[in-house]
Length: 617
Image (cartoon, rainbow, N blue to C red; front, side):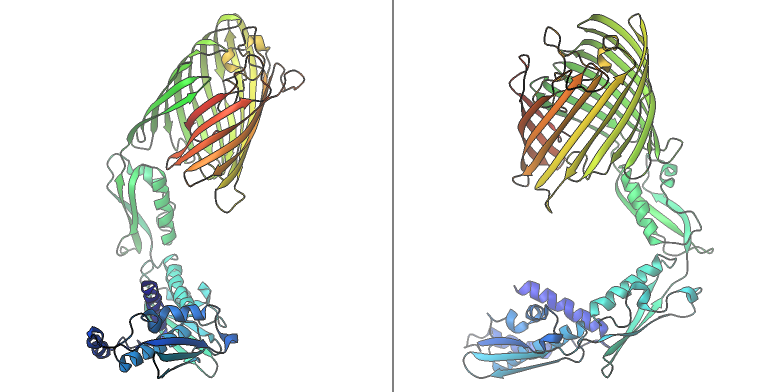
């Protein structure tokens, strides 16, 4: 208990000292401390005592006054170590009386009184009486500037600009906060070297006011000058220049430095970033900005494992380079393999392509599949533009070529399609792998044209999907999550559309409890045919049992139809329920879900198991 009380005594004492009328309160008496030290070292009988702190005039007393007095009381702090002599006890009383007066002054009770007495007996009885009296208020506040600093005529002349007004209670922390805010105010308005030169306070007991005068060394005015970098190796300075939120010659503002640092850190290219002004402006009043960075390793390699009863075990490996050509170009290669499909893909993302909020992505992939719906080889190549509209909305558009050599229930077929994918999305969730609040919404529209076998065809696929997350408690111990997706294909008959572009539902990211793509119509062998429309939705409750262990009951449903719109009269809605487990790690939750179909067909399994990283949606 003694350490926290001592810390609070120091803070209260410091606040009162800073507000003294141009003087410093005396510190501890070295002679008195030396006098008691030998007594404490003796082995003779000590002077035991009981202490009582009485607060009168409760109407004027702050609500927490008793707690604050206890926290700074030496008598209470050292009650288990009584002094060796009566003078030692008296010194403790005097110390408390002085400390209590500082507490009253810090709260603006400058007319209050503190008295103490010691009554004989064993143990001795020590009583301290505290009468706060009315709280004093702030009178006039005045800010003046040292010397004849150029341009000081347009600077604030009172502390009202930072919220300390006449009539406010004269609390020490309010004055100190206003002083700090005044300096920040000046530094944000072209005075980067502003400092407090002196402070004077004057208490008028007749009017119960406290006047405050601050003298400021404003320093020379400054505007933004050149930006100089230290520590750049592979990253080009011109790339970081595009993140600068000011223009040379604008009024210097320290808040802009914080914005710049945040932007540079957001590139994920650096382990550390320091942004600070130079020590003084140049002859033209321009203040250079110094940026010191330590570049992070640009390359990384990683991978993950997963398992699902419908696809078997799977593995994903990746290699990435986050600064391919010196301007944060992001190249990534992925190898994804399971028993039913093996894929190799690569992408190159170039940020700030023709616009600071726009990126260009080049991508290519090849996949060999052996699924229930189709088997064979497919390859894609494309490019796309992604534009950040604001903090939550994005838009994208691109062109993609898709080649497939597949075999399904209709036999082998080759196709070559040109696609123009377009979309808009909104995301204000708080975590990509484990969202607890916010929502996501995605609308995608992809026209296709090309050749499938001997048939020329064209069609359009549209998909609208979203999810929402709500934590009804103050913590994330319970998160209610829901999702929904509806998709439609128009412009071509189902049998003419290549199997890879048909619509499906079922599996770990869709209707858990049914096999991959198994929701919807099946052929005579029990394999999925796909459809021209699909609907699936789900709800779950993410419950944390401990900080790292959670359980997730869920309910999913889905429908795939041959028609262009989901039709429950054409195909029955398939329902599934289950229970999941989550192990929460620093890099995201590890998911284990067991789903059971509620209205299964003969072809459906009794249950499905899914193991992967991240939530289901």
